[in-house]
Amino acid sequence: MNKLRTFLMLALVAVALSWLSSCKPSVPDGIISQGDMEDLLYDYHLADAMASTAKGGFDKNVYLYREAVLRKYEVTQAQFDSSMVYYMRHADQLHDIYEHLSERLEDETRAMGSNAALLSGASGDSANVWSGQRDIILLPTQPYNVFSFDMKTDSTFHKGDQVMLSFNSDFIFQDGIRDAVVVLAVTFANDSVCQRVSHVSSSMTSTLTIEDGDSLGYKKVSGFFMLSKNDMPGSSTTTLQLACISDIKLFRLRPKNQPTQAPLPDRIPVNPQMPDSQRMRPAPLTAR
Image (cartoon, rainbow, N blue to C red; front, side, top):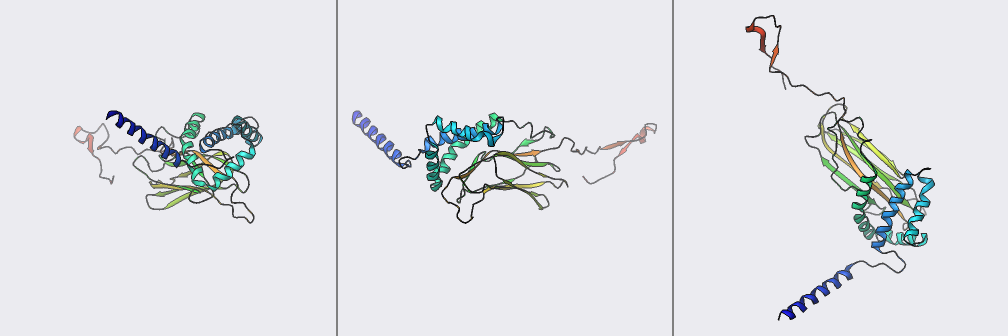
């Protein structure tokens, strides 16, 4: 009986594994598999990051660095291009690939950079308050062309603080106009709204900053990243067009010279030459 039970269990496990493997999306011959594409694109983005910091700048180095990645995986440029065209037509699979890449890219960008430069001029009370996804991929097709965020503030936000959105951008385009729109908006305590808009079209680090110059206090911070669609006549809808937004941070900055309000004393000292009965007297009542 025990042997029969063991045999049945093994048979069920085999059937389950077979069913799971059959559920994995397959790709046509000549197309790079999802697993290999994930590893290749991971190195592809690292190559872009290294090209931007190498001597001579990004434009001079990016072709050589990307070519080295293709040689590493023994993939030709034509194979890579055709595979990316396939994944552009199957945006759900490409989105899954970048979901898996998110944690790997986050660890790498954390290791490559520091927040020290961004936080210069801020007090020790400043902090990165971003709690959302750190790395996103934007495609020109809906719903993958927009990533939005909406965050209610708490008591750690003080009047006079600044809010700064920081991120890295990277584009992989075969043709068309590169244009990612980034919006940062804040709602102040009096329900007035202030926003900053930026158009990004190259591999770079960008920041958007909003100041509470009137010391109104914050109620909400929101915004979005969007990859604009190329609607120009004759433009292709299948060529590779994607933007990677990585290492997203949202800083709450407290300027070092921001004044702090001292607490009012319960009693106000007066002239020490006065008699003891008059040396201290109650402070005048004021609204606090």
